[in-house]
Amino acid sequence: MMFIVIEGIDGSGKTTIAKKLHEWLRSRGYEVFLTAEPTQGIIGRMLPSDSLSEFAETFLFIADRAEHTKIIRDKLSKGYAVVCDRYYYSTCAYQAVYLAKYFGGDEKTIDYLLKVQKPIIIKPTHAFLLDIEPEEGLRRIEPRGKRVKFEKIHFLSVVRKNYLYIAEIEGLIVVDASQPIDDVFRSIIAHISE
Ligand code: TYD
Image 1 (tube, helix red, strand yellow):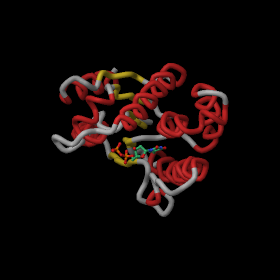
Image 2 (spheres, rainbow, N blue to C red; image 1 turned 90 degrees about the horizontal axis):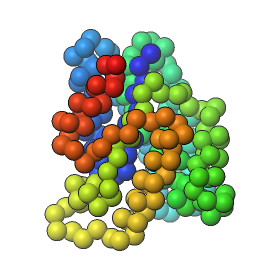
Image 3 (tube, protein in one colour; image 1 turned 135 degrees about the vertical axis):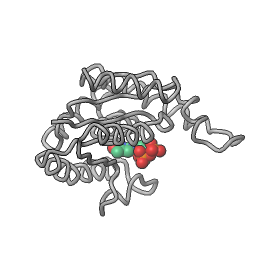
């Protein structure tokens, strides 16, 4: 089984890496299912949402994932290699930022979100965290000259810290994503080829 998940904050390059992985696996003879969350399904299309309450948004991300996992399970059972751009770690890293106040801090919230998602996920064979400073990630994706709001940088720095905690307890492979994309990709395939 080959089930690869790519995680990281906005601007970390995970979508580019997921596409390159798709091509690389195909060139090695795999049939590949490249997929992403939030999905384009009826639930995923509502996400992310500024108008939903914190709990509604959180549990919709999880509901979207529960449906997505059924598709992933089916593809894996048919022998596909699956490459997924974001998975349950995203909900832990992002939603913990605003749920922390209800559960006694970031780490307790992450532990709760991991536990609640256990029944609806499949543990990936390889999970990578593309780690980058928010300022640098945002510089890559914001139009040149547009000033990035302080709140966004602050938000993503908490997401990044959450990701590093998750990486430690869930065993994600942390890759320095500030390197040129080809170097990031090379270190990922080195891990997969092991
Ligand atoms: P995504 O489509 O991956 O956007 P990008 O490629 O720009 O990172 O994700 C959209 C946004 O949804 C992104 O800001 C992260 C957020 N998100 C969550 O907050 N929780 C989740 O569980 C998921 C899957 C995404």
